[in-house]
Image 1 (cartoon, rainbow over the protein chains, first blue to last red):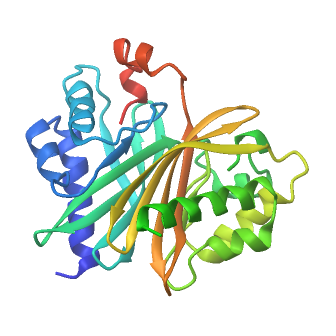
Image 2: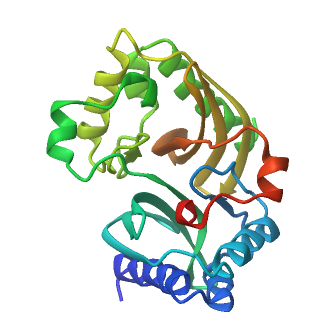
Length: 137
Length: 137
């Protein structure tokens, strides 16, 4: 399996754990030996593994947790690190996410996740009319 | 200089280029030899260097571009890659950002940036009352 495919597989395992509300599977996909971080939409950054897993426990145990599907994945490879950029379809809208993976004991494990709201699903319209400057950076 | 300090310096150069609206300096801090990505708030992911620099040209040339300052940086090291998690203070509010750096020709250069809105500046209150599930992931 190429690194590209292995990283995509790890990314899918992350979203499968999320969709299945499976905290054990979610714990398994997160890195153990390197520092991890996580930025849920609207939240401040978490940068401690216990805090990250506690946040997932809170999210996955919530009966109102949204259904989620991942699509339009793009893999950027950096040797023993890799980034997946993708969109997340939820009942409440679309998010765009960055997922950083690291090779750990021969397995690709997620080391960081940030997701944020996508303002529009019409990139053509967005190009003609960029978001207001106050929302840019 | 330690890797931690060198990555923090590169992160500050990125924000200095942003604050100074200096497109040449902004171009200089972005990686040249590895794939790059960028997710501005509300935008879809950009994963082509030309598209990323075009987005910065649009933002930095806008006379209404917001003032920006970076603070509360945390560095996560992964060998020849590193992640900086930080908050960004703008006139219109506070953002939280992930900046991925890679060591390229001995220099740390930014390979990916995602910024998103921070819902609140009161993490203590947020812990007691988590965001609505529809906003989580």
